[in-house]
Length: 64
Image (cartoon, rainbow, N blue to C red; front, top):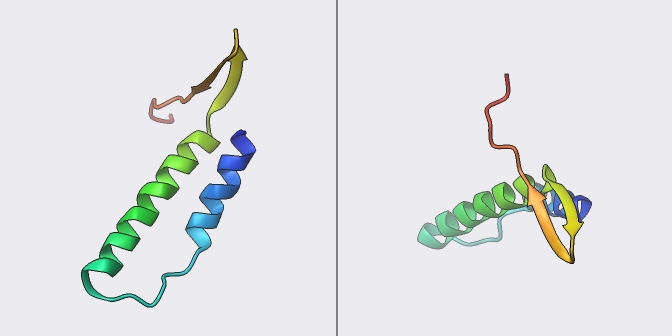
């Protein structure tokens, strides 16, 4: 599951921008950045299944 998010984050990072202009272009770029951040966070997570519950653990502490 974590690998799947890693692949999705890379796909979002590498996809091109469709031929749109103006406010739609900015909305597309902003959404792509949010998608990338979401997928990248989950790609860095540790996933466990306990009692049938999938849990993603994400360390948000600053790196030393």
